[in-house]
Length: 614
Image (cartoon, rainbow, N blue to C red; front, side, top):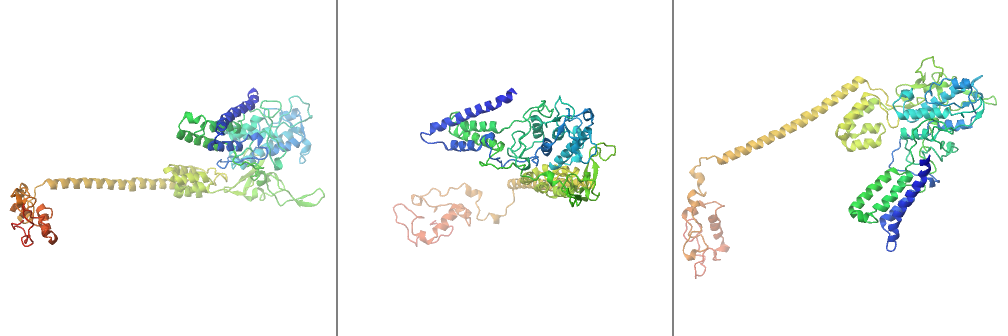
């Protein structure tokens, strides 16, 4: 209680400190110019105002993912409104000793009993009968809330034995709602007030079931609902155990994170704004900008709100009411107060309507079974619900299940594209699976086994219809594994083997080339014609000679000239061919005797191999 009382002043002090750290650099920069980043931060602070001040509506978060956000969002919320208007009595000894079938173990207090006169369909009803009727109301609310969360309530007939904390939280909440606490000291038959659920009972449900509607509408206290829930202002502010509320849960309700996160936002703005405040001296501008961006991203994903004006209705209230969705309207006529026949109104649970034929119950697609005993006749509760046929679901068997066969075949043949996830309504995970090509095959194989082994729950339509024979799943899974193994170990293995053969062939060719180069081969004399010989290698070109031959190859050795015959790589061959060009014959480039004029064209006639002028 002390921590709760100090929580609001502590958060206010945090806001003041954060705001001062944020404002100081702005005041300092106001003499010149206000930093752009801090201006944006100030606008963000205005958007993320305290939730208590947002009385005009609810904000939203576009990147948030909703979870268990149903209408009504709290189990038994409709019952809490109804019981507040009912006349409740202090129980007598018979009512205290009445055995509870569904809520046995969840209710550990003296129960406030609905006035037995309320039950018009029962004659001479007692308080013990009222307690049993309230127990049935709790089990009905439990069944319908699980159906609203797309869960099959028949899988959770004994909530006290379930390992899921969410199922247990729903069970306790509906039992405490429909079997409220009576004052410890009251006289039998005395009228008592309805005691709302304790704060931590509601908080335990929100935490255990991870209820997320991406706005501020999921609040156990100070609720501001509209429509049929406009008169509901929230559950009790007391924490169990308390004589002022109903419940015995010891788990603490999770505290709202909006105000502390707002303080963190202000601190990050003041400390981490790029190039501003303390960030400039603590780190470089680049590091400050990166850290600032990461902090803003983290805050954006956790805070609710990007809508400054807000919405008048919470997200869960804008969704269809599952109590209306699962109601049925039978073609049964009842007498009005005026004595005229009129069509019966929509009601809940066709199995409990004795005026309906069996083919009218459960929309003709299911059978009625006792919920707590699974169909046995020795139950004193006698509450029955529809157990739908294989391909149908919901309390009245009007929603067709998605096919396990279809999902399995999509997973086998197109699982790497995520089409199986799209079929089951999981759009976000389907996109991720498509982008990663089935998680590089691992996710693909995982979904094949997960979908084929047993009907799983989908995101939007409950559990898959069990229309896949187990032998077919085993055969196709083994065939898929064999084909995949063939692809991996045959095709890829063959490609690796071919690559190894190519490497070996190239290595062998390189060795053969080296061997051929080093081997001596016989050469015919005709092949050596015009090629350099061993005798010509040691001769100088041009050789030393008279001064007038300087710079020419006129005195080249005959063996050099012979070796240059038709050999384009020979220097003398290139020299001789160039000297035959008409435009170069009179240039004197090929005959430069000292002190003499360039020779005439008649002196340079010839140009063939072996002539002395060269």
